[in-house]
Image (cartoon, rainbow, N blue to C red; front, side, top):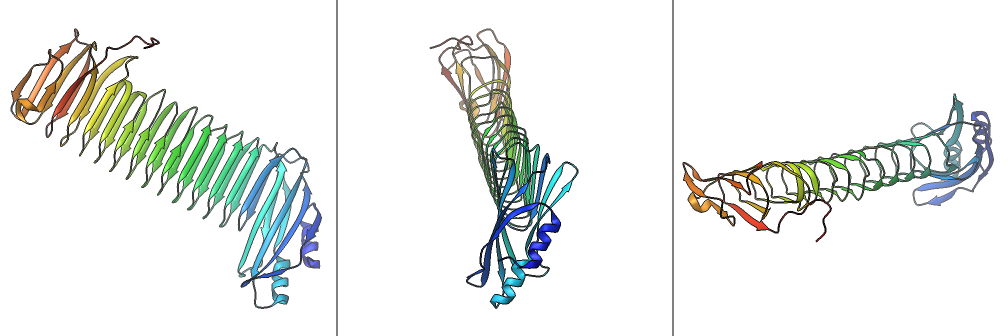
Amino acid sequence: MCGARCLFALMCAGSLLAQRAEEPMREGVYWSQGVSGTTARADARRLRVATLGDITVSGEERKDIAWGLKKRVRAPQAAAARRLLDEIVLETERRGDSLELSVRRPPGADVLAALQLSVPRSWREVALTTESGAIEVSHIRGTVRVETHAGPVSLTDVEGRAEVRTGGGPVRLSRIRGMVRCFSGGGAIVAEQLAVGGELLTRGGEIRVREAGGSLRVTSGGGSVRVERARAVRAGTEGGLVEILEASGPVVAATAQGPIRIHRAKGVRANSGAGRIQLQDVSGSVQASTGLGHILAAPALTGSLENWLLTTPTGDITVFLPSNIAVTLEAEAGGGTAGIVSEFSAVRVRRAARGAEARATLNGGGRLLRLSAPGGTIYLKKLEALRPPGERR
């Protein structure tokens, strides 16, 4: 059983009730002990937890807090282990409208502690901090803020804002209804069903987002970035693929070294230091450039087209254009007159000082389509005609 000092500390610290302690057990070089109990919420509106190991918090339809603490210490003998285990104490304190739980440990001891909490779902805010360990939170109606110096983080079914910070570890976010801000010092970030959107940043690891109802800013220091669906996206990585499958608004994408693929967007700015750029079913204003690689682009067959500028100094550019598109073309490429190959008869290619150039008004002319590939070839391919917005095949 927990010693007298442990019981006294718990009673003095706050309203921890119905405590039950298991007998210490030997686990290799460690001794472990489980302690559990309940504590009253005492009408607090915010919950703050500080500990030194893993934290698991689950929101439920309840009025009190049920807790379990798994303690582990390294000690040569049972008596020494018991003394150390007794000094690992879960304390509670009320400060204003906040209920604070903290795990106290003996100084200088080799200690591990995992804390599990079943709490009322209706907290206005839940803030969790651990020195080193995993954090898992689910089914909370208010704002959730979590921080771990090193460890994975998982948040599921949070109705308020979500703020995550981990010094190094993967992050998984699912069914977050408020704004999200997430930072990992070195780990992957995976997000599903972000109702609003937010900012995701990792210094080393991939970022994958399945769906965001609002605008996203995603940045990786060295990993691929993939967004399946969002309203607007600003994405960047120092090395890897940037892929946006569908955005109802504008997309800004950049990678220092890697390809860019944007499959649907209304307005695009894409830049790769070295990599292929592929744009498909895009509309609005488009600017794309790569320092080393090819560019392939095809506009949406419905929707408005604005000015386009595609540039690559060392690769080819291939543009698929609807047969009835009204644009004004300006193109320059290397390789003499063979540097521009067009399926549109209105395009006349002539030799220029550094290769080939062409200027043409297709179907009466319109917004500017400017293509520059001084070290490659430009291909103009003909597609089916543009359709009015809303028209079906």
